[in-house]
Length: 407
Image (cartoon, rainbow, N blue to C red; front, side):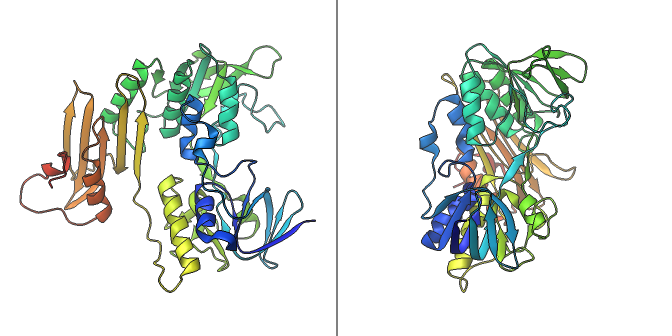
């Protein structure tokens, strides 16, 4: 059995864990189960599309990195046991175990006793997922992407870049429901359609089918009985915090691993950050909070006398859907849908394919969506992140939608 020890042991080599380990340097040992150096998961769609190579999305290498799967935390002994037999002793433990893809309860997806996805069906969460999809996609092949959130849109766009004939099936009313309102989603839909992606909203997938006795899925069955032939099926149905290690260790878990403003669990020697963590009742599973939490915890561990409590992250989503003729830039923050008493300001130009909208509640900016022209996004994001009262001059704050934010 191999033994290791470190002042701080970080379990999970995703964005949050790698960022924290890089900040802490040799005092930290990073444990990650993937066989690769840490990488930026946000850029996997660009790798799938062929715009980037895996080497380009690598993150700064940690000083100490153990490639192994952590299987048990013993809080009494303050050790982490790994699947390869390694035993790692810690003074402080940080769980950055990330999130798992949600696998929908589709009829025929898992035969009795099976736990692995059938042939032709892929999640899209890890570099291995990305490389497997890249190896499988060929020009002209039929692909069905299940899920029209941010990940599903990116996956569909990347597969179309590779020449696949893509159908995107979204159960909700419009694409990217967490980030966009219906008008903005229509522009994204039009962009995808122009590039050859067939988009179906309010479309529930009921099951998958195999041909004969084969293992590979060859068709996707919709709730209305319609059947889509497919060679590749991509599950982009969201993610759920990965909390098994914490739960087995007796730590408090709700949707994610429960942490306070110091990012501590109910064991003061154990912290949690990133997609697996639930702070103030929220587990957003987004890149910006993961990085902010890593920075906040690094400061708390290295300079506790000057560290500030983590107060949450107001994260802005930015996305570019490439196109040789007219790329579509998207930015969204806060609440895209208004309440009955909110003020809504919109500027739209159908000819140019641009759309800008902000939602004002009382004297606060609470959300916004911009497509096609992001010149105003910096000023809008600053106003939203500051969460300060807007100027009260009795006029609608149209300056929020101007290119210079009123400066």
